[in-house]
Image (cartoon, rainbow, N blue to C red; front, side, top):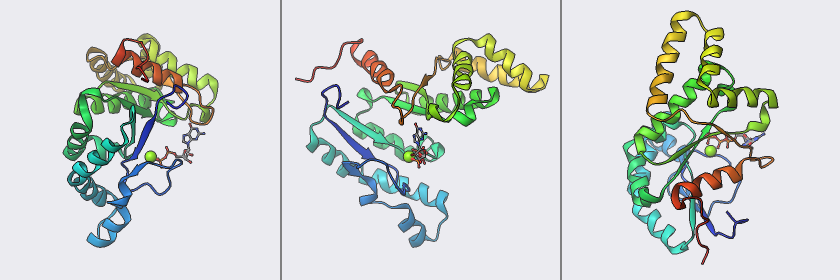
Length: 230
Ligand SMILES: Nc1nc2c(ncn2[C@@H]2O[C@H](COP(=O)(O)OP(=O)(O)OP(=O)(O)O)[C@@H](O)[C@H]2O)c(=O)[nH]1
Ligand SMILES: [Mg+2]
């Protein structure tokens, strides 16, 4: 974003993040911290995350008013990694609505190790579809940390994301017939709701693929023209 001349604001929305490798402009941990909630209510990490997400919903107005003071072009939000604690909670919808659902875009991070097997790939596709289904916001499925697996594996995963027959074949080789039929049926459902799309490989180390995320967002909102920086 900065390379393109935009100013951006970063918001960490993960109350359980122990270390974030960037300095968030706004940090939910200033209001709600997972370890504090665990100690205070005697809860384990999952129960505490649920309490946290409801607490975050109650802080939404305050967060939005702080975001507004920045007057930035983009707000980049880092959400909790445990997706069921974000995607499945009604409080997350409250936050997304309050921050401006109509001009929001989701980047779904597919795990490279999960995506390396055909059934894992289909599972990841389903998680992405669930996220889309919960929020109904445009979404891009990204193969994150793609530098951690070898180039051949990246190419194989991409070929599954481009060509359904390659994926059918791979599923057939991996699983017995009955499981294959199940996976294929799931997969067809993904295809018919438009969730079977090419994966975008990305790495934050190299930083390969960031430009592709940027371009996709531009295409969704501006038909490919850069947003004006004026
Ligand atoms: N090699 C490599 N490592 C990465 C990349 N992105 C993140 N990491 C590292 O992977 C580890 C986990 O990072 P994240 O997935 O961001 O972890 P997190 O935010 O704690 O996890 P969530 O709970 O899923 O949000 C950290 O040590 C990161 O430095 C990448 O693109 N390539
Ligand atoms: Mg994280």
